[in-house]
Amino acid sequence: MRAKSVNIQKSLNYVKTHGTLVEKARLSAIIWNAKPSTEVLEELASFQKQDGGFSYWVKNISNITDTCYVLEWFDDLKVYKGEIVDLACRFLLDHQQKDGGWDEVSEIVKYNPPEWMMPGRIETRVWLTAYCAHVLIRFGYAEAEGTYCPTDFLVANCDPSGRLKGYLRATWIALPMLAFYPGPDLESFNKAVKIIEDNFSLDWRGSYIAWLLRCLKDGGLSSDHKLVLRTISELKKKQNADGSWDLEEGEGKEHRVNATILALRALKEYNLIKF
Image (cartoon, rainbow, N blue to C red):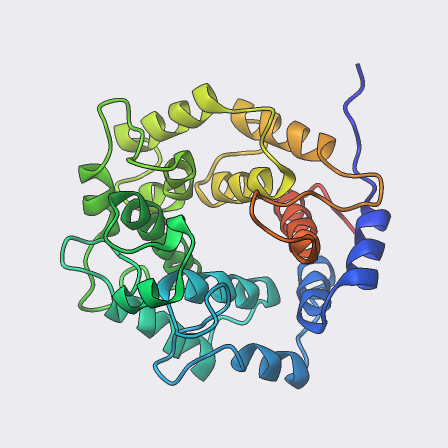
């Protein structure tokens, strides 16, 4: 049976029709390497608090999750330096704990955050540590002076099979960090890859699969790796008739554009979209 192909033009049209100013700029940077306008950067700056962190899902205070989330938009825009970015990365670094891990800011409990942002839970700490590590690697802060190694915390919180505690996604979000240190040829990395292979589900939604594919890429898995091939195949199948991809559970319809951008970026990074 012939593999399903992606209708890129429909996806582009979907983002152009339904996307915000920032989302359209992210798409243009990903696909055509277009530089963001001053207006776009000012819009992003409006999410930043005085301490350098961002608020998005929880509007009231800057927090770790939202800071990583918005920094990924800067990553899409290929903006890796500058006051806004540097302050945000410093916010993350300043909140790293001595065991190498992160936890969500304690003040967030006042604002009824979702479970996955609730501080004090090992499930939150593990996935958030993997997330922070990945983002900081992307922005060149993985070995910033005075920081601790996130791998120490991650390895200390996995079972003998290599699965990290809590959410399955934590294991694949950790792949870029495990590839960075101790390295892609060592046991912790290979065990994590096998955990993902063994637990891969056809029920995963488009944005979830796109996030996985990006972590596989940043973890150094080649385009002919069997897990990459499977993930790409499923991501293609998940495209909707209107060109969009579905969201993760709990996200509103307004975030379907973001899911589509994530899918396009993941495919682009594996050279499956060319203009």
